[in-house]
Image 1 (cartoon, rainbow, N blue to C red):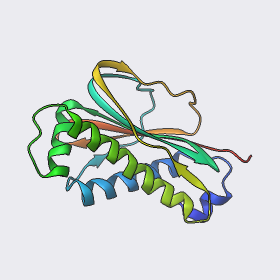
Image 2 (tube, rainbow, N blue to C red; image 1 turned 30 degrees about the vertical axis):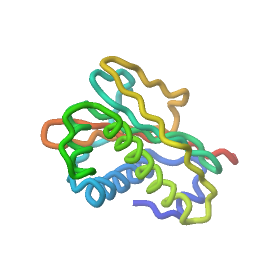
Image 3 (cartoon, helix red, strand yellow; image 1 turned 120 degrees about the vertical axis):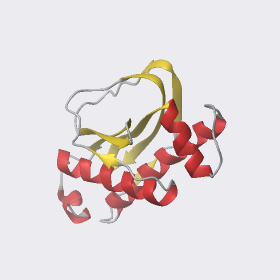
Length: 169
C-alpha cells in the first residue's frame, strides 16, 4: 500500500494506488457505517458502463486531482444496504435508497479525499449525484487513471470506480 507522501510525489497514480484507495475506503465505510462485510476482487479489465435494474451514486473531485468516484449497485443489494444503514426494512427503490447511495458515494469519496489530503494536497468533493433505472449507461469522458473494483455481498456484485488525474502536470 502506498503512503500519502508517495501520492504527493506521483504525477500519475498507478492502478495499484487507485485500487488501494478504493478498497480501503469501501471496506471502511461498509464495515463501520453499514455493518456489512464485502469481498473484493481484482480490478476489472473491461469497461462496464451499462446497468440494468441498478442505482449509481457519484461524486466528483476537483483541485490538484480531478475525477470521479462512482458506486453501481443492483436494486436488490441497494435495498439491503439501505436497510442496514438506516436500521429499517426497505422494500422499494425510493428517496431513502437514493439518499443512502448518494451518502455512501460521498463517504467513499471523503475517504479517498482524506488519503490525498493527508500530504497537503488540495482536493474538493462535489455534491453527490444519484441515477437509477431499469436500463441506463454511465460513460466517463476519461479512461486514463481509472480503476473499477468489484465487491461482493453473498452472490450480489456492486462496483466501485475511481478516476483521478493530477491537474498540475
